[in-house]
Length: 161
Image (tube, rainbow, N blue to C red):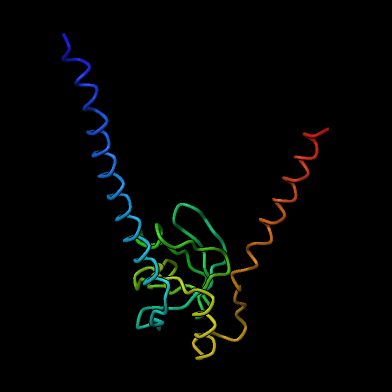
């Protein structure tokens, strides 16, 4: 009848083993992921447009992986975000993007990549983009969020009354 207690004594050990295993696995995953992102963001070669490609600026988000963009050849086109970009890159109005044009459908295009602010400025400096293009300096997006925080404080005040 004393088999039960002995079983209990051994269980902490088993649990500890399992725990250390899980911990290591998690750690490895995190580091690997972090490394990958660094190589993504650190200076990559700027891709210039090739035949059948055109630069464009996002004018309207349509949702569902689609948006409208003004191409610098003067045409407004309906653009589709590739699956790969859709998961990794957040595209917003005013962003500079590179499109793959479809010969058979001039009004539609596929987004090949998005340029960040620095790359867009470089393209402009190289004369690849027209001077009229306004490039968002990424930071302007934050103003709205600060505004939201203020509202939050306001609500806290109400709770205290």
